[in-house]
Image 1 (cartoon, rainbow, N blue to C red):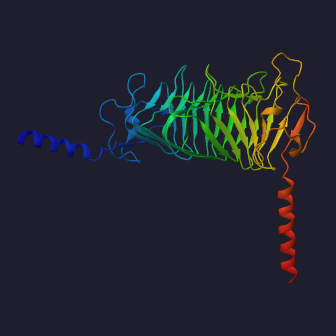
Image 2: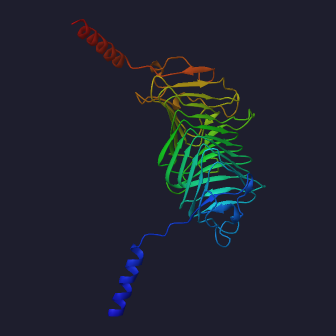
Length: 361
């Protein structure tokens, strides 16, 4: 019995002991040096320390990287897949990491950390972010495929970074943190969905989204991207955000606040909403520009019942009197904004009058 108690106590102490931290290594190799060459990494930024023992920085088709790697102003090439889990990757100002070769991607997994400041990241294939991912400035590009913000984030903070996706940008679940001053250039679709850990309710401030980045003649929707629906997911644009797209579909919702401007139907489409998706205007300063729609097309959708005045909670079809254009036919080109309710305007005028009286005294 005593031996069992001692063993349990030892196990308890082991469980409570702090987890060992991964060793940190700096890239010290030549410009354009090989990411997977351990000789290019050192425990000291000036190269006077030690290099990683063994072969821990492998093409991730073999093993995930568990070290903490820092690139500080260097240009580095990885001709293979790069997969962190656990471990971390930090790209500091002026750094450039190119992951080259057909099908090679970057995976920042749920137990990993990614820090990106004023750097350049180019990946041939898919880029997957998860865990703790922090972006400040710089440019992230998927040369041939998607940029995916997956469904197990501890924290996602984006401030001033440009994301270029040759295919789609996807948000697969909750995104704790903040997204501001960013740019998303997307060639195909903008995905919102629940990938098993909750719906993607994404809020962006002072951010630009262009879902027609290469001037293509198709694509450009906010939707699930895959075969399922996007019910319960939403994209909220605040501040002075902008959006260019065709439609909001598959149950996803678009919410516009601040002075955000959304331009929909950019390919002379037959609809700007579908499958029960709604567009909600939170503030009089927000604007919805609709390019002329093809109302004779078989898939034409009259979106007026799905345009919601966020102040009154009433849709355009039910009460167009609270919109700046009260006779929109549902398909002609138009620029729509909600107008303050008369009561709100009267209160504002009364407040101004009272302020004037106080000034005169």
